[in-house]
Length: 526
Ligand SMILES: Nc1ncnc2c1ncn2[C@@H]1O[C@H](COP(=O)(O)OP(=O)(O)OP(=O)(O)O)[C@@H](O)[C@H]1O
Image (cartoon, rainbow, N blue to C red; front, side, top):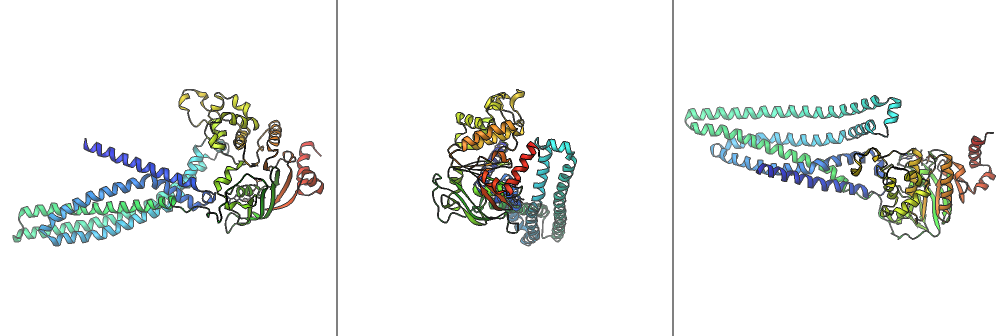
């Protein structure tokens, strides 16, 4: 009864500690305001270690602490009984354990170091594993026949991490073997001494048998004590990775002068903004100046890699400008709490997210406070031209947009989840961005790139109507859908090279006009 009760309590303690650690780590990750840490491989390695440590290290440390108390008590008991017979032998045994202790502690540090070393390998291994077994990559993998290539890469990484661990295991076995041999020699010497004592009459036969038992007992108890202490040491070292993540400093400096954000009334000004992703990297934005007046739509066009999406990231404050600043009605956005700023922005990103959730949740998540606001969700879906598609799904808005999960209620129903087409998904993402009806600033980064011409024309006219009187930034390569913008800016290699209305830019015969006519020719022929 008692062992079962003890095991239950231990497991319950493990569950509670792991749950808290699990919660804390993801709460910390959610607190990161910018994308910088998510783009830093060193941080991602630490996060992976912290995730593992958060799961195992707390319970290991608890086990080790409990074990430490138990083995200390056993060791003390044996030491007392042996010291009655031979205090010198006790001292010799304890001294002989010192090298073991030093070696064990050094090995536990090395083991923690190896975990750090293999973290990038493990992360890559997970990437390959996920790519091979993920429904979203299955098409390409099959078409290009890359399954074995990825599996090979995965196994290579696994072999590299295995070989690091094997090297450590061998070192440990070598040291452990040598120390055990030294212990056996010491125990042998004690036996010889005891036999000699019995012969000379200083020890009785009873003393000899007790001495043999006590030497073995002390050696076992002390080595267990050392091993448990080393395990605790290792758990603490690993736990350090966890602590370094949960204690991470905020990823943006607190505002110099925090200002409350007010409804946009004048406009958003990007003033001499320079940006590069790292100190060594090339400049992506090189002194961008752009004003987005309140109530107007500014279109932004430019070649691939010109820096359009980067500018969007700065507007949402996923990164801060390296030089220059962005002003919201004259207030530097670095002086506005990021969450407040983002509450006023609605956005549709080029690389939007596919959530394995229902259609309603996939849209409602655009304004999580209104995730249950069905009329608003339907309105957003209608504007994005996806209402009819959703209405035709087996469970309408409640249909899961994934074949990865079962909805408990429909476990037996093959219609439980559906897969949408690329363009339908894009309209879902657009609806998500339109959930924030009263937001001040709408950013649309390639919102119609995957739509068929009919859907595009419908969505463009819906969006034009929706944008009227609202402040928005529209980025697209489809110049036909940008011509109704109040003004259009051309971004060339990180700088605004042209700005004006569609008519002005066509008349000036610059890059925009070239791009526009090139596209138009593609449709009507030359
Ligand atoms: N996270 C990143 N780290 C480093 N460089 C990046 C990162 N994201 C983008 N870049 C680089 O910044 C430059 C601008 O990229 P950006 O995505 O802003 O271009 P874009 O104008 O939106 O292009 P597209 O029309 O292809 O979407 C590119 O050279 C790209 O390689």
